[in-house]
Length: 157
Image 1 (cartoon, helix red, strand yellow):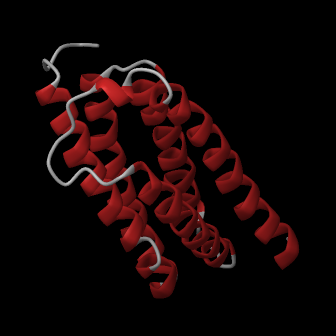
Image 2: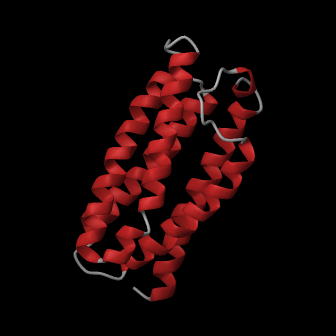
């Protein structure tokens, strides 16, 4: 597989995830989210539109590096798995307002991204290091999800 194709695959997977996540997030932001009690340290909405593109670029580059190595099947599965959990979290939390299920999903996402980083590290140290900002942001998002769930009744929806 050529490097161009590997880059296109990396870009396409992350771009589709970004587009779906953005769409699903705006479903909630434009409706119920503005009426929620938010936890301390919740950033202004504009911060998210700065942070996510940076994280997505790091994901593209990192995954492209992984695709350039043999024995990368585990890393590929973990990368695609975390993308699916990422989209699912946006659907659960923002599109459906299911904060408890969103919390369960994002904890699984945290664990999968950590496993993915370990798998990337076995193939290419730089590709793993490029994923740490994503993991840190997800851990912060986990705190925010837990806070929203707790402060808004800790119910199923």
